Length: 351
Image: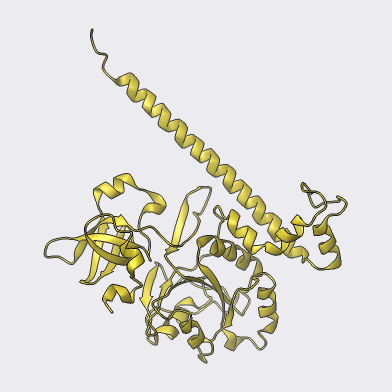
């Protein structure tokens, strides 16, 4: 097995190449400098001027991307000329009022959503992560960490299973080692996973346990409120002894939604199915006769808090869509304004 085959390279990636160069995978990104593993070693790479001119935003490389690189003569450096089409893409909306989308990890087979079995446990936050996971094209796996600090994990598991239908749930402890091997087995055969969660859930400790060495720096959580300190400050791909790959990511204190219209259909399939069963197609789920949603809320079939979360997320998605449309319209208007200005500045040909 070649070096890049260890990182997941296969014939399907080979077929996507459209320029000359050396294939490699991005394992680290920091301020538009990329560490790329190739069959000839690891190179520090930057984007070619042409690629930077023709592309922007989410088209720039991300950890997990396969790229085509031209090696700089006599150096362990390279120039990236192509980013191969992705198989999956996990992202979130950037912080603040911007409509920009921030890539978290790409070309992953599994998204491991980590949440600790302490005061940080938050089922509503998990619903947000699941929306993005379902929309990414990767398969979600839920990891409940710090089982050694929890006397009874069953109530937590039941809450998770109530919102994550059919999603595998693992409880793990880096102290006792429980569940670590089961997680490693999910990534055999050079499969790639991305580990996501808020600060303090134990992601770096979990990576260390899976690798078997102190690969990542670890900090303790604050004892007064169980909130975590940021440990990982960048995204990095780690090659596991089991043969799989895991992308470690910085803890996220907030997770703003992007355009996850498909994700909400899957993540809230229970609510969506109830809505389809209403007597009227345009039912607003208030006091209309034959409303299956209201019936489920009244008889306890649908949890009221989950339904309120569904409505909140739908409002956020609608708001994001309106802002995206407005931003796209503004960009289009500015483009045509510039074209008009350029046209007026053209010299007039004398007859």
